[in-house]
Length: 178
Image 1 (tube, rainbow, N blue to C red):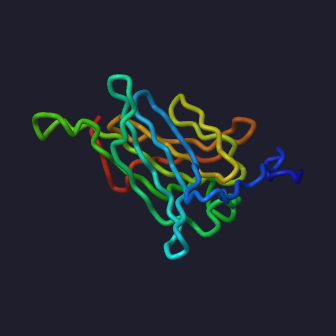
Image 2 (tube, rainbow, N blue to C red):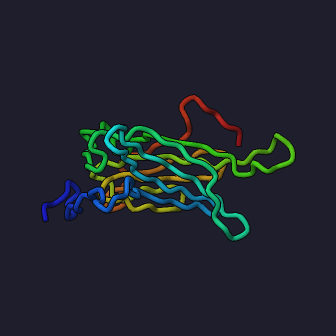
Image 3 (cartoon, rainbow, N blue to C red):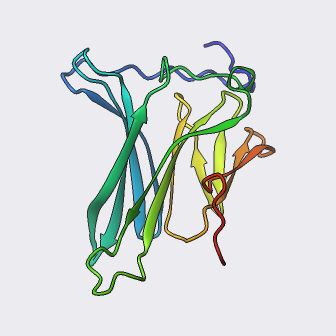
């Protein structure tokens, strides 16, 4: 097996299934009682492939889907890119935010679940989100979820644990109070 740029063996690139499904699971992340699942969705040939992120909230022991967002998939979405090709080690290419307490009595006091869809370069082995370490799959797509008001800063880690890049997941121009 050829060596990847980081010196570890290259992982085989996942291929879309030929089983009639029109989607491929890409990633999952959980932070306490919130979670996100991402999928590569391709249509019947008449639509552009999409990457979807669906958020969930655990309430009374059951997981409930609370919303989702999607965006166009990059060209060759399952091909892993080098940081030179991407321009950096981590890129945020999609995000979404869904209210998790829509059944509240008053309009204020909304609590949100946020998610981001990231692409990690071939040199990245793991992504650190606070105390969570997320393994980067062979296709390089990473899903991140959070329930806090403030968006996390994520770190791209090499196989040896060194920090290659950091990325603030807050929307550009958005400031939040502590």
